[in-house]
Image 1 (cartoon, protein in one colour):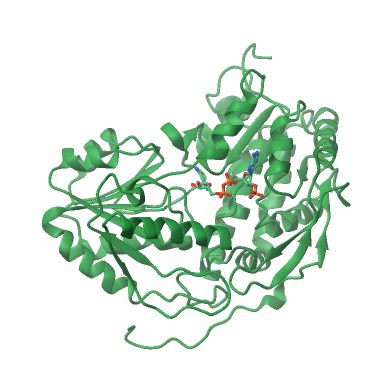
Image 2: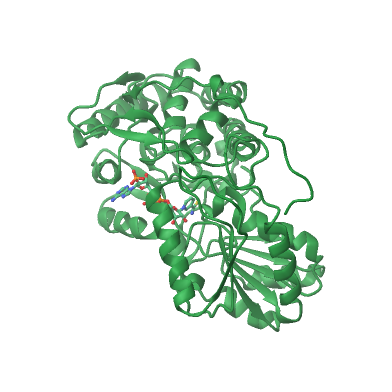
Length: 482
Ligand code: TAP
Protein backbone atom coordinates (compact mmCIF):
# COMPACT_ATOMS: atom_id res chain seq x y z
CA UNK A 1 0.00 0.00 0.00
CA UNK A 2 1.19 3.57 -0.65
CA UNK A 3 2.18 5.43 2.53
CA UNK A 4 -0.67 7.89 2.01
CA UNK A 5 -3.75 8.18 -0.19
CA UNK A 6 -4.05 10.62 -3.05
CA UNK A 7 -7.12 12.80 -3.39
CA UNK A 8 -8.67 12.67 -6.87
CA UNK A 9 -7.15 15.24 -9.26
CA UNK A 10 -9.25 14.94 -12.42
CA UNK A 11 -8.34 16.91 -15.55
CA UNK A 12 -11.38 18.57 -17.12
CA UNK A 13 -12.63 17.16 -20.39
CA UNK A 14 -14.55 20.39 -21.02
CA UNK A 15 -11.44 21.83 -22.71
CA UNK A 16 -12.04 19.71 -25.80
CA UNK A 17 -14.95 19.64 -28.25
CA UNK A 18 -15.45 16.25 -29.81
CA UNK A 19 -17.75 16.19 -32.84
CA UNK A 20 -20.25 13.35 -33.11
CA UNK A 21 -18.81 12.39 -36.52
CA UNK A 22 -15.77 13.21 -38.64
CA UNK A 23 -15.08 13.28 -42.37
CA UNK A 24 -11.74 12.90 -44.13
CA UNK A 25 -9.25 15.77 -44.45
CA UNK A 26 -8.46 16.06 -48.15
CA UNK A 27 -7.24 19.13 -50.03
CA UNK A 28 -7.58 21.32 -46.95
CA UNK A 29 -11.27 20.48 -46.39
CA UNK A 30 -13.17 17.97 -44.29
CA UNK A 31 -15.07 15.91 -46.85
CA UNK A 32 -17.47 12.97 -46.66
CA UNK A 33 -16.05 9.55 -47.44
CA UNK A 34 -17.30 7.72 -50.51
CA UNK A 35 -18.53 4.25 -49.71
CA UNK A 36 -16.59 3.04 -46.65
CA UNK A 37 -18.37 1.95 -43.46
CA UNK A 38 -18.02 4.49 -40.62
CA UNK A 39 -16.60 3.14 -37.36
CA UNK A 40 -16.67 4.26 -33.74
CA UNK A 41 -13.73 5.27 -31.65
CA UNK A 42 -14.11 4.57 -27.92
CA UNK A 43 -12.50 5.70 -24.70
CA UNK A 44 -10.72 2.50 -23.59
CA UNK A 45 -10.95 3.54 -19.94
CA UNK A 46 -14.75 3.62 -19.97
CA UNK A 47 -15.83 1.99 -23.26
CA UNK A 48 -17.80 5.19 -23.97
CA UNK A 49 -18.17 5.96 -27.68
CA UNK A 50 -16.36 9.23 -28.40
CA UNK A 51 -17.18 9.77 -32.07
CA UNK A 52 -17.98 8.15 -35.38
CA UNK A 53 -15.13 8.25 -37.87
CA UNK A 54 -15.15 7.78 -41.66
CA UNK A 55 -13.56 4.83 -43.37
CA UNK A 56 -11.59 5.99 -46.42
CA UNK A 57 -12.03 3.77 -49.46
CA UNK A 58 -9.44 3.27 -52.18
CA UNK A 59 -11.20 6.09 -54.11
CA UNK A 60 -10.84 8.41 -51.13
CA UNK A 61 -7.16 7.53 -50.85
CA UNK A 62 -6.84 8.28 -54.55
CA UNK A 63 -8.44 11.71 -54.01
CA UNK A 64 -6.03 12.38 -51.13
CA UNK A 65 -3.00 11.37 -53.21
CA UNK A 66 -4.16 13.61 -56.07
CA UNK A 67 -4.63 16.55 -53.69
CA UNK A 68 -1.16 15.92 -52.28
CA UNK A 69 0.34 15.75 -55.80
CA UNK A 70 -1.29 19.01 -56.84
CA UNK A 71 -0.09 20.77 -53.69
CA UNK A 72 3.37 19.32 -54.24
CA UNK A 73 3.81 20.42 -57.83
CA UNK A 74 2.04 23.77 -57.65
CA UNK A 75 3.01 25.06 -54.22
CA UNK A 76 5.05 23.15 -51.71
CA UNK A 77 8.02 21.95 -53.76
CA UNK A 78 8.38 25.44 -55.26
CA UNK A 79 8.33 27.25 -51.95
CA UNK A 80 11.66 28.30 -50.41
CA UNK A 81 12.86 26.31 -47.41
CA UNK A 82 12.65 29.45 -45.30
CA UNK A 83 8.96 29.83 -46.10
CA UNK A 84 8.23 26.15 -45.45
CA UNK A 85 9.99 26.58 -42.13
CA UNK A 86 7.63 29.41 -41.19
CA UNK A 87 4.63 27.10 -41.59
CA UNK A 88 6.29 24.45 -39.45
CA UNK A 89 7.06 27.01 -36.74
CA UNK A 90 3.46 28.14 -36.88
CA UNK A 91 2.19 24.58 -36.46
CA UNK A 92 4.60 24.05 -33.55
CA UNK A 93 3.34 27.19 -31.81
CA UNK A 94 -0.30 26.21 -32.29
CA UNK A 95 0.41 22.75 -30.84
CA UNK A 96 1.84 24.53 -27.80
CA UNK A 97 -1.11 26.89 -27.58
CA UNK A 98 -3.60 24.03 -27.85
CA UNK A 99 -1.51 21.64 -25.75
CA UNK A 100 -4.09 21.05 -23.05
CA UNK A 101 -6.81 20.30 -25.58
CA UNK A 102 -4.54 17.88 -27.45
CA UNK A 103 -3.45 16.15 -24.24
CA UNK A 104 -7.02 15.64 -23.02
CA UNK A 105 -8.13 14.35 -26.42
CA UNK A 106 -5.16 11.97 -26.61
CA UNK A 107 -5.86 10.57 -23.17
CA UNK A 108 -9.58 10.12 -23.90
CA UNK A 109 -8.98 8.32 -27.19
CA UNK A 110 -5.90 6.30 -26.21
CA UNK A 111 -6.22 5.59 -22.47
CA UNK A 112 -2.76 6.83 -21.52
CA UNK A 113 -2.38 8.84 -18.29
CA UNK A 114 -2.97 12.57 -18.71
CA UNK A 115 0.38 13.33 -17.09
CA UNK A 116 2.09 11.44 -19.93
CA UNK A 117 0.14 13.02 -22.78
CA UNK A 118 0.57 16.42 -21.12
CA UNK A 119 4.27 16.11 -20.24
CA UNK A 120 5.61 13.77 -22.95
CA UNK A 121 3.49 13.27 -26.07
CA UNK A 122 2.33 16.82 -26.75
CA UNK A 123 5.54 18.71 -25.83
CA UNK A 124 7.60 16.25 -27.90
CA UNK A 125 5.22 16.63 -30.85
CA UNK A 126 5.71 20.42 -30.72
CA UNK A 127 9.47 19.92 -30.35
CA UNK A 128 9.55 17.82 -33.54
CA UNK A 129 7.94 20.63 -35.51
CA UNK A 130 10.25 23.26 -34.01
CA UNK A 131 13.30 21.11 -34.72
CA UNK A 132 12.37 20.40 -38.33
CA UNK A 133 11.31 24.00 -38.95
CA UNK A 134 14.94 24.83 -38.27
CA UNK A 135 16.17 22.38 -40.91
CA UNK A 136 13.80 23.48 -43.71
CA UNK A 137 16.14 26.16 -45.05
CA UNK A 138 19.41 24.38 -44.17
CA UNK A 139 19.04 21.05 -45.95
CA UNK A 140 21.99 21.87 -48.18
CA UNK A 141 24.18 21.98 -45.07
CA UNK A 142 22.93 18.75 -43.50
CA UNK A 143 25.51 16.51 -45.23
CA UNK A 144 22.70 14.64 -47.00
CA UNK A 145 24.54 14.69 -50.34
CA UNK A 146 24.64 17.13 -53.24
CA UNK A 147 21.51 19.16 -53.95
CA UNK A 148 18.92 17.54 -51.62
CA UNK A 149 15.42 17.65 -53.16
CA UNK A 150 12.01 16.36 -52.01
CA UNK A 151 10.72 12.97 -53.11
CA UNK A 152 7.12 13.97 -53.84
CA UNK A 153 4.03 12.50 -52.16
CA UNK A 154 4.66 10.51 -49.01
CA UNK A 155 2.24 7.90 -47.63
CA UNK A 156 2.40 7.55 -43.87
CA UNK A 157 0.73 4.90 -41.69
CA UNK A 158 1.02 5.09 -37.91
CA UNK A 159 0.03 3.01 -34.84
CA UNK A 160 -2.11 3.77 -31.81
CA UNK A 161 0.43 3.93 -28.99
CA UNK A 162 1.63 7.54 -29.51
CA UNK A 163 -0.93 8.86 -32.00
CA UNK A 164 -0.01 12.56 -32.11
CA UNK A 165 3.69 12.01 -31.50
CA UNK A 166 4.02 9.42 -34.28
CA UNK A 167 2.19 11.85 -36.57
CA UNK A 168 4.72 14.55 -35.68
CA UNK A 169 7.65 12.17 -36.27
CA UNK A 170 6.26 11.52 -39.74
CA UNK A 171 4.80 14.83 -40.89
CA UNK A 172 7.44 17.29 -39.64
CA UNK A 173 10.49 15.91 -41.53
CA UNK A 174 8.42 15.19 -44.66
CA UNK A 175 7.17 18.78 -44.86
CA UNK A 176 10.52 20.31 -43.90
CA UNK A 177 12.10 18.53 -46.88
CA UNK A 178 9.40 19.77 -49.28
CA UNK A 179 7.20 16.66 -49.58
CA UNK A 180 3.43 16.49 -49.20
CA UNK A 181 1.67 13.88 -47.12
CA UNK A 182 -1.22 11.40 -47.00
CA UNK A 183 -1.40 10.03 -43.46
CA UNK A 184 -3.54 7.31 -41.91
CA UNK A 185 -3.84 7.22 -38.11
CA UNK A 186 -4.68 3.94 -36.36
CA UNK A 187 -8.32 2.84 -36.30
CA UNK A 188 -8.56 3.06 -32.49
CA UNK A 189 -6.91 6.50 -32.10
CA UNK A 190 -7.85 8.86 -34.95
CA UNK A 191 -8.97 11.91 -32.95
CA UNK A 192 -5.74 13.84 -32.39
CA UNK A 193 -4.83 13.42 -36.08
CA UNK A 194 -8.21 14.98 -36.95
CA UNK A 195 -7.55 17.83 -34.53
CA UNK A 196 -4.15 18.21 -36.17
CA UNK A 197 -5.97 18.63 -39.49
CA UNK A 198 -7.79 21.57 -37.92
CA UNK A 199 -4.42 22.93 -36.75
CA UNK A 200 -3.15 22.77 -40.34
CA UNK A 201 -6.09 24.93 -41.37
CA UNK A 202 -5.48 27.32 -38.48
CA UNK A 203 -1.84 27.62 -39.61
CA UNK A 204 -3.11 28.35 -43.16
CA UNK A 205 -1.01 25.52 -44.51
CA UNK A 206 -1.65 25.39 -48.27
CA UNK A 207 -4.50 22.94 -49.02
CA UNK A 208 -3.35 19.41 -49.88
CA UNK A 209 0.06 19.61 -48.21
CA UNK A 210 -1.28 17.42 -45.38
CA UNK A 211 -4.16 14.99 -46.02
CA UNK A 212 -5.55 12.72 -43.32
CA UNK A 213 -7.54 9.62 -44.21
CA UNK A 214 -9.03 7.52 -41.43
CA UNK A 215 -9.76 3.82 -41.63
CA UNK A 216 -8.34 0.42 -40.75
CA UNK A 217 -5.82 -1.89 -42.41
CA UNK A 218 -7.53 -1.78 -45.83
CA UNK A 219 -7.14 2.00 -45.98
CA UNK A 220 -3.46 1.62 -45.05
CA UNK A 221 -3.07 -0.99 -47.77
CA UNK A 222 -4.69 1.37 -50.31
CA UNK A 223 -2.02 3.98 -49.47
CA UNK A 224 0.74 1.39 -49.78
CA UNK A 225 -0.55 0.18 -53.15
CA UNK A 226 -1.29 3.58 -54.70
CA UNK A 227 0.98 4.21 -57.69
CA UNK A 228 1.11 7.95 -56.94
CA UNK A 229 3.02 7.43 -53.68
CA UNK A 230 6.76 8.10 -53.90
CA UNK A 231 7.74 7.05 -50.40
CA UNK A 232 6.15 5.13 -47.53
CA UNK A 233 6.83 5.73 -43.89
CA UNK A 234 5.30 3.05 -41.68
CA UNK A 235 5.33 2.51 -37.94
CA UNK A 236 3.61 -0.57 -36.62
CA UNK A 237 3.99 -4.29 -36.19
CA UNK A 238 6.68 -6.39 -37.83
CA UNK A 239 4.00 -8.58 -39.45
CA UNK A 240 2.40 -5.64 -41.28
CA UNK A 241 5.85 -4.15 -42.03
CA UNK A 242 6.80 -7.36 -43.83
CA UNK A 243 3.58 -7.28 -45.85
CA UNK A 244 4.32 -3.71 -46.88
CA UNK A 245 7.89 -4.58 -47.87
CA UNK A 246 6.51 -7.39 -50.03
CA UNK A 247 3.84 -5.13 -51.57
CA UNK A 248 6.31 -2.50 -52.72
CA UNK A 249 9.09 -4.87 -53.84
CA UNK A 250 9.87 -4.16 -57.48
CA UNK A 251 8.32 -0.68 -57.43
CA UNK A 252 10.26 2.59 -57.26
CA UNK A 253 8.70 3.43 -53.89
CA UNK A 254 11.11 4.12 -51.07
CA UNK A 255 10.26 3.02 -47.54
CA UNK A 256 11.22 3.37 -43.92
CA UNK A 257 9.82 0.78 -41.51
CA UNK A 258 9.75 1.32 -37.74
CA UNK A 259 8.56 -2.00 -36.34
CA UNK A 260 8.40 -3.96 -33.11
CA UNK A 261 10.95 -4.57 -30.37
CA UNK A 262 11.87 -6.67 -27.36
CA UNK A 263 14.35 -4.37 -25.65
CA UNK A 264 16.78 -5.61 -22.98
CA UNK A 265 17.24 -3.46 -19.89
CA UNK A 266 20.52 -4.69 -18.35
CA UNK A 267 21.32 -4.07 -14.67
CA UNK A 268 24.86 -4.74 -13.40
CA UNK A 269 25.62 -5.31 -9.73
CA UNK A 270 27.45 -1.97 -9.42
CA UNK A 271 24.39 0.03 -10.57
CA UNK A 272 22.61 2.34 -8.10
CA UNK A 273 19.73 -0.07 -7.54
CA UNK A 274 16.99 2.37 -6.53
CA UNK A 275 17.67 4.46 -9.63
CA UNK A 276 17.77 1.32 -11.75
CA UNK A 277 14.38 0.28 -10.37
CA UNK A 278 12.96 3.67 -11.42
CA UNK A 279 14.48 3.09 -14.86
CA UNK A 280 12.94 -0.39 -15.05
CA UNK A 281 9.53 1.11 -14.20
CA UNK A 282 9.94 3.84 -16.84
CA UNK A 283 11.22 1.24 -19.27
CA UNK A 284 8.20 -1.04 -19.20
CA UNK A 285 5.29 0.59 -17.36
CA UNK A 286 5.42 3.97 -19.16
CA UNK A 287 2.41 4.15 -21.55
CA UNK A 288 1.14 0.77 -20.20
CA UNK A 289 4.12 -0.86 -21.92
CA UNK A 290 2.64 0.05 -25.33
CA UNK A 291 6.08 1.17 -26.42
CA UNK A 292 8.04 -0.37 -29.28
CA UNK A 293 11.34 0.31 -27.51
CA UNK A 294 10.10 -0.79 -24.05
CA UNK A 295 12.57 -2.55 -21.75
CA UNK A 296 10.38 -5.64 -21.72
CA UNK A 297 13.25 -8.03 -20.95
CA UNK A 298 14.98 -7.20 -17.69
CA UNK A 299 18.46 -8.76 -17.49
CA UNK A 300 19.84 -8.57 -13.95
CA UNK A 301 23.26 -9.68 -12.73
CA UNK A 302 22.64 -12.83 -10.73
CA UNK A 303 24.12 -11.68 -7.40
CA UNK A 304 21.71 -8.71 -7.17
CA UNK A 305 18.71 -10.28 -8.91
CA UNK A 306 16.73 -11.14 -5.77
CA UNK A 307 17.29 -7.68 -4.35
CA UNK A 308 16.32 -5.91 -7.59
CA UNK A 309 13.15 -7.98 -7.97
CA UNK A 310 12.24 -7.34 -4.30
CA UNK A 311 12.64 -3.57 -4.73
CA UNK A 312 10.83 -3.63 -8.08
CA UNK A 313 7.79 -5.39 -6.62
CA UNK A 314 7.72 -2.97 -3.69
CA UNK A 315 7.80 -0.05 -6.15
CA UNK A 316 5.07 -1.55 -8.35
CA UNK A 317 2.86 -1.74 -5.29
CA UNK A 318 2.92 2.09 -5.20
CA UNK A 319 1.96 2.63 -8.86
CA UNK A 320 -1.48 4.15 -9.23
CA UNK A 321 -3.46 2.29 -11.90
CA UNK A 322 -6.81 3.71 -13.00
CA UNK A 323 -8.58 6.74 -14.43
CA UNK A 324 -6.22 8.14 -17.09
CA UNK A 325 -7.75 11.60 -16.67
CA UNK A 326 -6.59 11.76 -13.04
CA UNK A 327 -3.32 13.70 -12.82
CA UNK A 328 -2.00 11.25 -10.21
CA UNK A 329 -2.45 8.16 -12.38
CA UNK A 330 0.74 6.29 -13.34
CA UNK A 331 -0.70 3.47 -15.46
CA UNK A 332 -3.79 3.97 -17.60
CA UNK A 333 -6.04 1.74 -19.71
CA UNK A 334 -5.00 -0.81 -22.33
CA UNK A 335 -5.83 0.72 -25.70
CA UNK A 336 -8.30 -1.89 -26.96
CA UNK A 337 -10.02 -5.16 -26.14
CA UNK A 338 -7.96 -6.85 -28.88
CA UNK A 339 -4.70 -5.70 -27.27
CA UNK A 340 -5.90 -6.75 -23.81
CA UNK A 341 -6.68 -10.22 -25.17
CA UNK A 342 -3.23 -10.45 -26.71
CA UNK A 343 -1.54 -9.48 -23.43
CA UNK A 344 -3.68 -12.01 -21.54
CA UNK A 345 -2.86 -14.79 -24.02
CA UNK A 346 0.90 -14.18 -23.87
CA UNK A 347 0.98 -13.97 -20.07
CA UNK A 348 -1.00 -17.22 -19.85
CA UNK A 349 1.60 -18.78 -22.15
CA UNK A 350 4.31 -17.51 -19.76
CA UNK A 351 2.72 -19.35 -16.83
CA UNK A 352 2.09 -22.47 -18.90
CA UNK A 353 5.77 -22.56 -19.92
CA UNK A 354 6.84 -22.46 -16.27
CA UNK A 355 7.67 -18.83 -15.46
CA UNK A 356 6.56 -17.40 -12.10
CA UNK A 357 3.91 -14.71 -12.40
CA UNK A 358 3.45 -11.84 -9.94
CA UNK A 359 1.25 -8.77 -10.14
CA UNK A 360 0.71 -5.80 -7.93
CA UNK A 361 -2.81 -6.91 -6.92
CA UNK A 362 -4.13 -3.37 -7.32
CA UNK A 363 -7.84 -2.77 -7.74
CA UNK A 364 -8.97 -2.23 -11.33
CA UNK A 365 -11.96 -0.24 -12.61
CA UNK A 366 -14.96 -2.35 -13.60
CA UNK A 367 -15.51 -0.82 -17.07
CA UNK A 368 -12.79 -0.44 -19.70
CA UNK A 369 -9.67 -2.47 -20.54
CA UNK A 370 -7.12 -2.94 -17.77
CA UNK A 371 -4.09 -5.04 -16.92
CA UNK A 372 -2.14 -5.02 -13.66
CA UNK A 373 1.61 -4.30 -13.75
CA UNK A 374 3.08 -7.80 -13.95
CA UNK A 375 6.52 -9.34 -13.35
CA UNK A 376 7.64 -12.77 -14.56
CA UNK A 377 10.63 -14.44 -12.90
CA UNK A 378 12.23 -17.83 -13.68
CA UNK A 379 12.02 -16.91 -17.34
CA UNK A 380 13.98 -18.96 -19.86
CA UNK A 381 15.23 -17.43 -23.09
CA UNK A 382 13.08 -19.85 -25.08
CA UNK A 383 9.82 -18.76 -23.41
CA UNK A 384 7.42 -16.85 -25.60
CA UNK A 385 7.34 -14.03 -23.02
CA UNK A 386 11.11 -13.64 -23.56
CA UNK A 387 10.89 -13.73 -27.35
CA UNK A 388 7.61 -12.12 -28.42
CA UNK A 389 6.53 -8.54 -28.05
CA UNK A 390 3.75 -8.39 -25.42
CA UNK A 391 3.17 -4.63 -25.85
CA UNK A 392 1.69 -4.34 -22.37
CA UNK A 393 2.71 -3.70 -18.72
CA UNK A 394 4.58 -6.98 -18.33
CA UNK A 395 8.30 -7.46 -17.67
CA UNK A 396 10.19 -10.74 -18.05
CA UNK A 397 13.19 -11.09 -15.71
CA UNK A 398 16.26 -13.07 -16.76
CA UNK A 399 19.67 -13.22 -15.06
CA UNK A 400 23.31 -13.23 -16.20
CA UNK A 401 26.74 -13.59 -14.59
CA UNK A 402 29.23 -11.87 -16.94
CA UNK A 403 29.04 -8.93 -19.36
CA UNK A 404 29.56 -11.38 -22.24
CA UNK A 405 26.55 -13.41 -21.14
CA UNK A 406 24.47 -10.23 -20.83
CA UNK A 407 25.33 -9.27 -24.41
CA UNK A 408 24.59 -12.76 -25.75
CA UNK A 409 21.20 -12.86 -24.04
CA UNK A 410 20.30 -9.27 -24.96
CA UNK A 411 21.06 -9.94 -28.63
CA UNK A 412 19.16 -13.23 -28.63
CA UNK A 413 16.04 -11.75 -30.24
CA UNK A 414 14.76 -11.27 -33.77
CA UNK A 415 14.37 -7.57 -32.94
CA UNK A 416 16.98 -4.83 -32.52
CA UNK A 417 15.37 -1.57 -31.48
CA UNK A 418 16.50 -0.56 -28.00
CA UNK A 419 18.52 -1.55 -24.94
CA UNK A 420 19.50 -0.03 -21.60
CA UNK A 421 22.63 -0.49 -19.47
CA UNK A 422 22.83 0.29 -15.75
CA UNK A 423 26.34 0.42 -14.30
CA UNK A 424 28.65 2.97 -12.71
CA UNK A 425 31.49 2.10 -15.13
CA UNK A 426 31.68 4.38 -18.17
CA UNK A 427 34.02 1.99 -19.99
CA UNK A 428 31.53 -0.85 -19.57
CA UNK A 429 28.71 1.33 -20.95
CA UNK A 430 30.77 2.07 -24.06
CA UNK A 431 31.75 -1.58 -24.50
CA UNK A 432 28.17 -2.76 -24.09
CA UNK A 433 26.81 -0.12 -26.46
CA UNK A 434 29.28 -1.33 -29.05
CA UNK A 435 28.21 -4.97 -28.65
CA UNK A 436 24.45 -4.57 -28.47
CA UNK A 437 22.57 -4.90 -31.76
CA UNK A 438 20.04 -2.19 -31.00
CA UNK A 439 19.31 1.13 -32.70
CA UNK A 440 19.18 2.98 -29.37
CA UNK A 441 21.19 2.16 -26.23
CA UNK A 442 20.35 4.17 -23.13
CA UNK A 443 22.89 4.41 -20.32
CA UNK A 444 21.58 4.74 -16.74
CA UNK A 445 18.24 5.92 -18.09
CA UNK A 446 15.49 4.54 -20.35
CA UNK A 447 12.79 5.72 -22.76
CA UNK A 448 14.27 9.18 -23.29
CA UNK A 449 13.34 10.80 -26.59
CA UNK A 450 14.51 13.92 -28.36
CA UNK A 451 13.88 15.18 -31.90
CA UNK A 452 17.62 15.70 -32.45
CA UNK A 453 18.35 12.03 -31.80
CA UNK A 454 17.86 9.47 -34.59
CA UNK A 455 15.63 6.51 -33.70
CA UNK A 456 15.19 3.22 -35.54
CA UNK A 457 16.02 -0.44 -35.58
CA UNK A 458 18.01 -3.38 -36.83
CA UNK A 459 16.84 -6.81 -37.91
CA UNK A 460 13.05 -7.29 -37.55
CA UNK A 461 12.69 -3.87 -35.93
CA UNK A 462 12.83 -2.38 -39.40
CA UNK A 463 15.08 -0.01 -41.31
CA UNK A 464 15.63 3.72 -41.64
CA UNK A 465 15.91 6.33 -38.92
CA UNK A 466 13.48 9.00 -37.70
CA UNK A 467 14.63 12.17 -35.99
CA UNK A 468 17.91 14.02 -36.10
CA UNK A 469 19.87 14.73 -39.25
CA UNK A 470 19.70 11.02 -40.17
CA UNK A 471 15.90 11.15 -40.27
CA UNK A 472 16.00 13.77 -43.04
CA UNK A 473 17.81 11.35 -45.36
CA UNK A 474 14.62 9.34 -45.82
CA UNK A 475 12.76 12.34 -47.26
CA UNK A 476 15.19 13.64 -49.90
CA UNK A 477 16.89 12.52 -53.07
CA UNK A 478 20.31 13.87 -53.91
CA UNK A 479 22.77 14.26 -56.79
CA UNK A 480 21.57 12.73 -60.05
CA UNK A 481 18.87 10.59 -58.38
CA UNK A 482 15.55 10.85 -60.26
P1 TAP B 1 -0.17 -2.61 -36.80
O1 TAP B 1 -1.29 -3.55 -36.65
O2 TAP B 1 0.97 -2.97 -37.67
O3 TAP B 1 -0.81 -1.23 -37.27
C1 TAP B 1 -0.04 -0.10 -37.59
C2 TAP B 1 -0.77 0.73 -38.62
O4 TAP B 1 -0.84 0.00 -39.85
C3 TAP B 1 -2.21 1.03 -38.23
O5 TAP B 1 -2.56 2.31 -38.71
C4 TAP B 1 -2.96 -0.06 -38.97
O6 TAP B 1 -4.30 0.25 -39.17
C5 TAP B 1 -2.19 -0.12 -40.27
N1 TAP B 1 -2.32 -1.34 -41.02
C6 TAP B 1 -2.79 -2.56 -40.62
N2 TAP B 1 -2.75 -3.43 -41.65
C7 TAP B 1 -2.23 -2.78 -42.71
C8 TAP B 1 -1.92 -3.15 -44.06
N3 TAP B 1 -2.14 -4.38 -44.53
N4 TAP B 1 -1.38 -2.22 -44.89
C9 TAP B 1 -1.12 -0.98 -44.44
N5 TAP B 1 -1.42 -0.56 -43.19
C10 TAP B 1 -1.95 -1.46 -42.33
O7 TAP B 1 0.47 -2.24 -35.40
P2 TAP B 1 -0.27 -1.72 -34.11
O8 TAP B 1 -0.87 -2.86 -33.40
O9 TAP B 1 -1.13 -0.59 -34.46
O10 TAP B 1 0.97 -1.12 -33.29
C11 TAP B 1 1.74 -1.89 -32.47
C12 TAP B 1 3.06 -2.22 -33.15
O11 TAP B 1 3.73 -1.06 -33.61
C13 TAP B 1 4.02 -2.88 -32.18
O12 TAP B 1 4.61 -4.00 -32.79
C14 TAP B 1 5.05 -1.81 -31.94
O13 TAP B 1 6.30 -2.27 -31.57
C15 TAP B 1 5.09 -1.08 -33.21
N6 TAP B 1 5.59 0.27 -33.02
C16 TAP B 1 6.83 0.55 -33.47
C17 TAP B 1 7.37 1.79 -33.27
C18 TAP B 1 8.74 2.07 -33.79
S1 TAP B 1 9.21 3.60 -33.87
N7 TAP B 1 9.53 1.12 -34.18
C19 TAP B 1 6.64 2.78 -32.63
C20 TAP B 1 5.36 2.49 -32.18
C21 TAP B 1 4.84 1.21 -32.40
P3 TAP B 1 -5.38 -0.08 -38.01
O14 TAP B 1 -4.83 0.29 -36.70
O15 TAP B 1 -6.49 0.79 -38.35
O16 TAP B 1 -5.65 -1.54 -38.11
